[in-house]
Image (cartoon, rainbow, N blue to C red; front, side, top):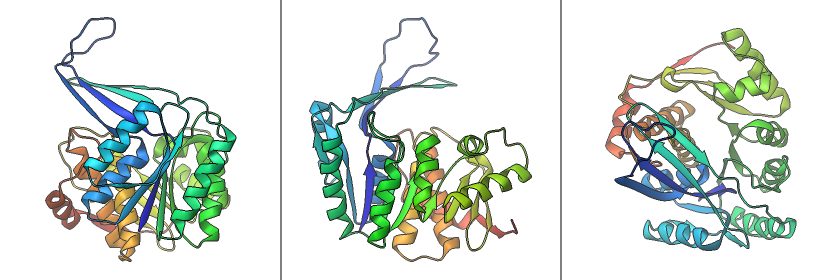
Length: 308
């Protein structure tokens, strides 16, 4: 089983508004709401890939109840800690040539509630082979909280994919997660400067490895990705028509988790991961793939070894 952790989930509300401009009045004719948060996007993709997956994290209030109900409608197993705090709502406005996001900050979580979540998390590890931890931390959570969760999973011998950013990433990798998936912006945060050449990428990767990252998938958007592990690979992807990039990174994480869970060769795992991200980018729904497209993209992705 794969366990996905979403500490800071949300109801993702997407408004489709042509010619959206700041300071004007608009009526949204099309609205799409779905269970959101990076970890739940991972969960939805894993379910579509036919994987045994259970979602966990922290939910609360009427918004939390709504998310649980929607997961049940998708036959997704969940084991969330129910907090006294209301789960947030995040808004995306999709226009002809732009995408504007408004992300609510969560309510402040209490220490005793985190302890209760950790009991649920530890119990789920007994049934899990792979664990994904995705997204931002709840307000009131210490920046090293992912580090604590990774350490709990490591004690149980579980492989962790950590997908977060900023201080949460820098602290989390100190616990030596099996795999992290930064993008260029997150790599620039690590290095503290603009990354505009391969030499700086190399420096940032070495720094991440020194801090504790075992394996790194560096997402480069339309330019593919680099994988740094026992063997280093450049991943070359075909050009596609992009409809919506939100959730593509989460879809990539789902593919990585699926490949590791199924003991695929690393090259095949990387192809699956990138194919899932590409398929999601062609969907208007966040956290959705077309299985036929995934299979087709896998055949077109090129994996090339290189020296770091």
